[in-house]
Image (cartoon, rainbow, N blue to C red):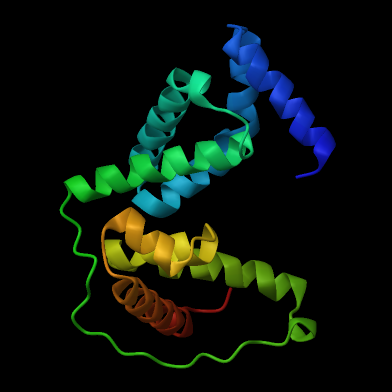
Length: 186
């Protein structure tokens, strides 16, 4: 994020802290779509994702006075939203460990060989394949690949070992690959 947009968000956050209702709406509108996407990937259910989104924003707005600009507002909000989702998932007693683990090497595709149209179709296919993952594997896959957490951070967040996080990510990646291979190309 460049300095100018950081300053704009800082002004909006400061306006929220001063009680400006329009500023709250502006912050919500700036981040709602991205945060909803995170919630949906984590929860794999549109209604639950909407609930987590609202709970995340409510919590963030209640705790806004504690936000000290040590990170961007978006990064702070993302952490709150992800924690809300994880807490909801833990109430379901998610099994973070899949007993049937196999690790396979998946070679990287050279960047210059990627067609933009194929990339879009691939993104849609990955999303569909992710929806088929067991809940625990989907969460770890999403946190690592899409949200940018490393396995150490994931192990802390989910209260699992780092090796469990790595193993589950590898298994999830393999399951996504297998699902995509079985999907029709369209």
